[in-house]
Length: 205
Image (cartoon, rainbow, N blue to C red):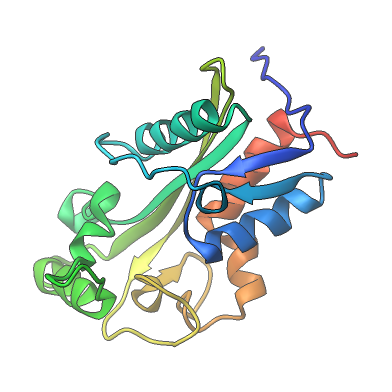
């Protein structure tokens, strides 16, 4: 039987400079009496994501934040994968949207996916989210959740972000960008990963 390290602290560092991720994770952790402070608020640098897996990149970010802050840190890495593209864009999900000016254009990224996958009859796709807790002593606990479904074209909906408009989760007719945000969050890859993390490492206070 696997023994996981429990989070005893009441404040965690979220290894992110993304305000949306900070809000979402803060809401999830609040149920366990845990407050969140972001790496951005602490002025921590963003480490280069050099790993080739979601868990690898999340671990890299969590460990960097934990060691720099001397606090327990939580990091995530997530992405969109298409079976016909052998799992691409995967860990390079954000890279596919990079623009010369440093911004990101997900409309062009989705168009790239469709262009490369259109010849295949395989529309299977999935979102992955890896969540990693790291302690200053280097200990980590990692969890990975998936939301299976299929890619569709043209994109539909304006409620989501990233590749949400071209992804329909299994058992549903709407894309992530069309459905009510509360429903999306309940069935998402992040929700799946967080449920595993919470059961293993969090204690309700």
